[in-house]
Length: 246
Image (cartoon, rainbow, N blue to C red; front, side):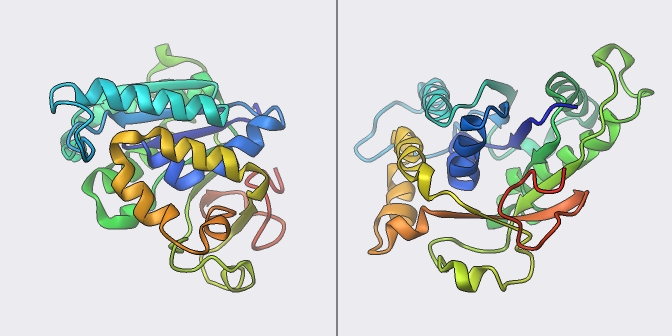
């Protein structure tokens, strides 16, 4: 098993909103970070003023995603061809195979995805959460898709913690909250995180509103929190590192 981290998310910009600082810090330590993004976010904002036509948006959002991932040190980016806001309708056998292949190829210790409520309730977030847990268990069982690579058991699946960073950013408070199993100080990666967020230029309205339109934006950008969904528990809660105890 590698020390790697595999992100399985729904849209371009999910990686920067959820785990940008942690990804950059792990990459700086030599940990392989990879991403599977299920859609190209073609129903998202085109920007104001518009930066693309609706038809051109998917390709632009892919370029934005790849630019953000380059900033974060993500070693491999795979985009699946599912439709924005229709991910729940993906054929289970097809998406299971795609995700099992990715897990067996990357052989990560930790997989990161959305919680069952999708953080915001977005149906694509909810869908990718369920598909990911399904694929993690299938990837460990060599009866599933024997041609998709040797079976691999992930040590830990992690969700974002139930903390909204622009509503509560004080570590002394966050560390006492239920569901905060990992609290990562990403202040050393704050500039990279900000740059990755800003790489999603078409999404600048939501990026600016959530991350940069606050007097405490530096503090908001400096802490990322996660919840243990499945697998080996950390040695302490909240742990300072997603690989704690592995």
